Length: 437
Image (tube, rainbow, N blue to C red):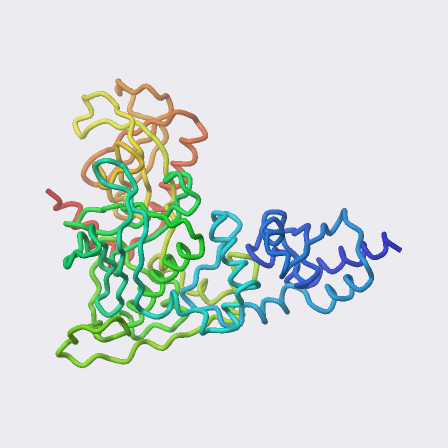
């Protein structure tokens, strides 16, 4: 009987929706929550074990199953659970995948099942209200120490601000929403809740590194930033559908028309209002059970327009150390930390530097950009043996990797960018790089 029940559970994996983890989309889940009725992967099962009051898990293949548990799994399943627990997920809310950090996956699971944020929209206020303030630990630009700083996100001003002192009247920095990106970087920052925020300052990329000891607080900040960008884009692209905008973003260096983006657009603390009439705050939409093809959930609407600009927040295409030489290619190669952010290749002396030492625009092959394996035969001065040559219309950039596998990974990342046709907005970014002092 025990074998028959286990076989019955295995057969349930063949049903639509059950072949991928209900939480992160990983294929071939081997575990199940027999109190929620979902099939999950090994990694997500560990998170479920931390909420035993909500979820109890078993191995699909190794554990003994009772008849009532098999019947419960048969009457539920991943699609039914998704229709319930994800019925009111905001369009901007980040749905983690198997490759995302532990924090994002844990808070997604807790938000769904423990806090039930996506069945009770009133619980979404921390990241959907249009205004948020609080204290985050921020890394100092010069001394590298993390100090508590007050942050304020206000959609009506279209900005994220931080203050060096609690009583400061003026912010230390103002980061415009249209130029802002946020990505979790726990390994780089050295904290499991570490977030890297990137924005433009004087037409150059600036990084700040923050964290909060409370994981929920940090993920709420992350999704509040995504919400602010989502609502900004709804105004900037009034003709786009909700699904189109939910996949849209603005590359760093592109300035969009603000349209009706003005003070008073969303709620916040009392303050002077704009003299111009403000449009109503863009209609909030929820994805419900909208399918996401990237996670094995069917053909999502976001795939129908792959030419749209990057997402509300984006992870970097590739990061790591390489060697580089100068523009004359006569000086020695120096080890630098490189970050590939869409079409911007930036290099830093240290991974946690606030400013890049230099930035290179990587266009498309139609515009004269090429990536080659190896270095010109006459090249000297590099310590690492595996070279890469990036050819742009203006010059060649010579790089070297320590291992062949790193070289292959970088070349693959570069070629993905070069093989992708440039968007009209990206020509403006390219022009800015050509005229950059």
